[in-house]
Amino acid sequence: MLVVCAAGTPVAAAAPSSAAPDPAPPAPAAPKRAAFTITSSAFPPGGTIPKVHECTSSGDNDPGKKNESPPFAWSGGPAEAKSYAIIMRDLDNNALLHWIIYDIPPDAAGLPQNVEHVYQPAVPKGSRQVYYRGSASLFGYQGPCSPSSVNTYEFTLYALNRATLTELNDKSTTRTAADVIAKATIATTKVSGES
Image (tube, rainbow, N blue to C red; front, side, top):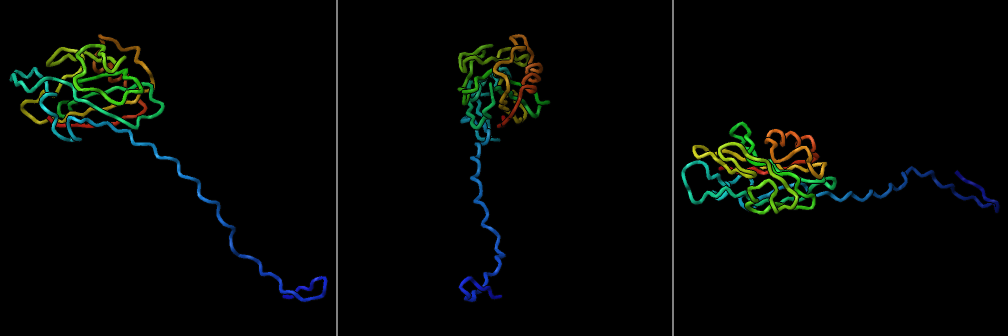
């Protein structure tokens, strides 16, 4: 097709463009948040829990058993977490509750080995523990007690939407504490070991 311009000179008309406009550049990807994880330097995931962390109430008087809680480290907790709690269960014994520690401050990134066997341990500051009524009677950690079998013990870390679980006290049972923790949970992660 010819188009005549004002000067009278024929000019070829431009063909209509069928090309789509350039797409907008992709939006930058949102930074990925690190996964919420818990580990222990005492044993690898699924590995053997050392004897120092086993209970001392099985009657065999093994000097290697000291009933010391394992050390833990965690990362990637949700920004909304106002506190943390840990529950230890024996998965091969009806999920028996062996240890509950709660009101762990939100800026904590782990627990040391051998948390004191008291209601309010000095470390981590502000935390509290439930009294264990079973083969031993004590506050806090009760290590693996399965002398005739190899059981799996699971440590679950709970990120909670409350800074303190005010309805719990030094008389609360493990079952009550576990229920209160479950209701305040916004995220969990776990690690297990065998003993």
